[in-house]
Image 1 (cartoon, one colour):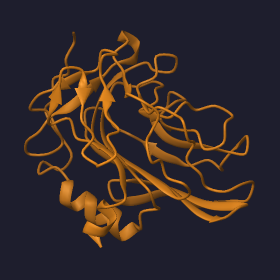
Image 2 (cartoon, one colour; image 1 turned 90 degrees about the horizontal axis):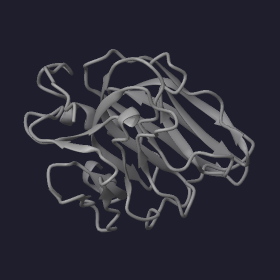
Image 3 (cartoon, helix red, strand yellow; image 1 turned 30 degrees about the vertical axis):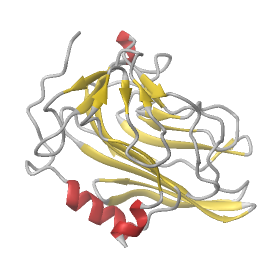
Image 4 (cartoon, one colour; image 1 turned 90 degrees about the vertical axis):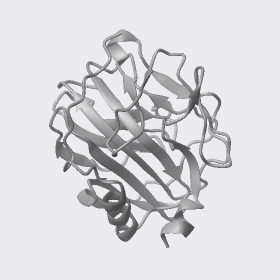
Length: 237
């Protein structure tokens, strides 16, 4: 099951190998990431025993985005998975795809200043019922997973997971289907809604709603050996 679900990866950025301003997609879809927006590869800093992560600071215009609109995006159900290391308190968007009134656009992050993580998804102009995590602590790695499951043309189910556990949902919405907006770039960091720096790693989008069993297995397989805590010095330039 673990291997089969990895075959449904739309894109995967692990930041362990970068060439110039490009982070290569580890999936076959060539959804590469452009870091010319100022985001910095942090060599040797990761939630894992080895590897790199990406330093993002929207207030200093250090952001990144996919080079083009996502190729082969999910047609219905989808999941978004990543690791994040918040540094500070405030409002930000860890990941988004041009969040607006357009159906299928979304954002994930503590955009209200409380350090509670929200998964906001637009469905036919409205927003799905609130999916909100407890507040994240600073200077600690977390695995975040947002899931949207297609039910039919008029409804869907969504949930938010932190460190392998469901923290919000599942919620059922009936004002439209689960969908992933086409012709959109993925943005890491949002200068119009970002007030602190953070690290991010292992960013993946899946073309299906991940089951809880897989989310737990993925977290246990990737969980840091130091129980989620790390002495990390963020780049300041």
